Length: 204
Image (cartoon, rainbow, N blue to C red; front, side, top):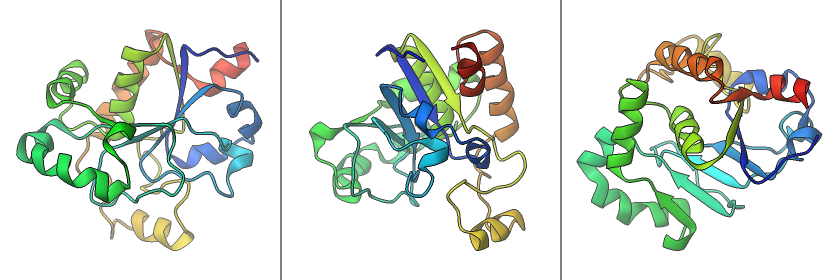
């Protein structure tokens, strides 16, 4: 498999990431984006170890990282930026252990544009990362986007966290239109604006 700098692989946090041991193939990509509180530790066989872009929403539950990728793209929902953009600009460097040259906070005008493109209010960081990728790369490949279809957990959650989340004691994903996002992303795949990693690997 050959890859080039104009391809971006975005790996989301859905449990489907752990279906196939393709980490060695993932690590062949030059540009690999991961989302929010991703981790590769102990999951390298499935999702690889390389990360070049950290997509995050600077949300309340976001954790700072010890090893920060060379590029950080911060995608805060438009309505949040309208309320507290100035406060976020002051808070982000300290909260995420980033200096101003190490991240890009996407402007609220662009975040509104992303909402208008997908016709979804407050898209997830994952969907915003796809829209950002389409703008900035020739080809966007996605993996692990499950849209909380079969549960509310992430691949890296502990057994207890998964159990609690799926009993709906923890209300993950309630701020987002998961069904709307799934249909929109399916449309992008059909229009060949993005491609699923499993399909890309079959064709390579």
